Image (cartoon, rainbow, N blue to C red; front, side):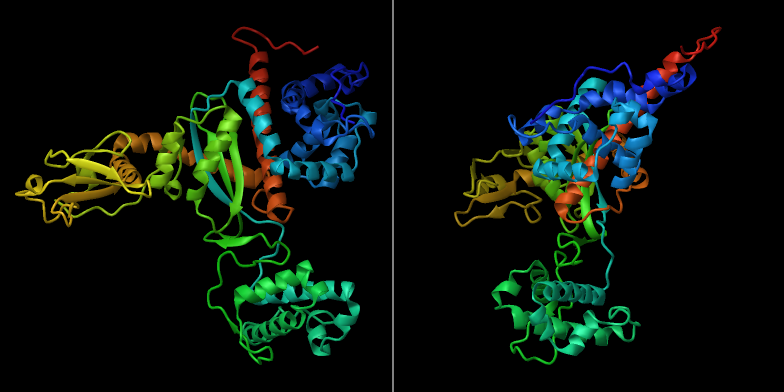
Length: 537
């Protein structure tokens, strides 16, 4: 059954067991601000649906378990280390408002709660609800925000191509020996010795030997896939699925089952298998792993900034795909989208600028461009309405006689008469084209107009000055990687990576909030001019 944490405080709480001096120091630490302000941000009610209202033992305090997971990421601890701190650390007892004799939980509880979070949109709901409460409590401004991505690696080893083949084959053969020992025993003895009963590691080869070993391993993969692809029991094994995927992505499939040589693809897809330990990892221009998409506030009047949206994507996905999802999450977290969203050129596109505008946001992202030849008329020389969907006039001031939209709903055409364009000195260079009916037509899209306007705007000193604030999010990326071990996670697979990342970012937000409150408390306690600091009693 679901039981919320009782608000009743015990007279035997940890602070009452300490002498006055130690209690005063504890009340000036992070633990006091966490207990006084951060604990109440955790929405326990959202987890009531996971517990039977009538049957079963009462749940462990949701507030306690979430706090352990957050502090685990705050101090970059393993599960075992976090549980040890919960067991014996007085500051943790005080921060979590728990009696020392009750400060205990087991690793299975943490595991089960993480499983609940995986089902709760991989922790997105907890992150959004906690951040929303934090923003309200700290009275933060969210009208100006910035977005960026950073690369992370799950708990895998970076493999060479030979290493990838060898580990995938080994993983399959070990699973086959366990599930179907008779079938495994029927395999060629030399093949089993290469991957199972070997001395040394087949993938650990000198550079001169690697091509020959890779050729042999590719042939082994071919023979194993062809041998077991029609065996119902083996084909259903996850490890065989990985082997078959490796074969399809990396090998040029020969026509004969008895081929003596298998050619390799020169450039496998960036979405191809990177590690049998984490099939979800992909390859992008930053390397193997995943990309973390972050958006944070950047209003200069805020005492501190918080991350308002976080997502995990494949390493080979373009950042352009993540502007709209970020805005949607920001709206859930903050109640509204920001007035301005600063981002780098990787997020800029006409589609994103228009999509952001429809949500009330100015996507302030620069766009790379090649300057047109001098004197060549472009869209920037034409006048459009504010939405970029109606052409008002050409560079000479001529107004189109007709405008209509194509069936795709994106492209529009503005028509001019032959008389309007005759005698124009720029006609040979003008983007207006002649039609079969003799009229002149300019085809354009609202996204092209948006790009043109942005190219003009980004050349102004005002845009460059206000956009300088975007680079501040690099410090957040660095803080997450340096202090919270974001760069190399302890988990694998996309869902677990997403949950781990969200817990780390949630820990970052709470840390900033608690640090701000602690500094404010110290500043208030500091003596003014002519005053002396009295002892805290």
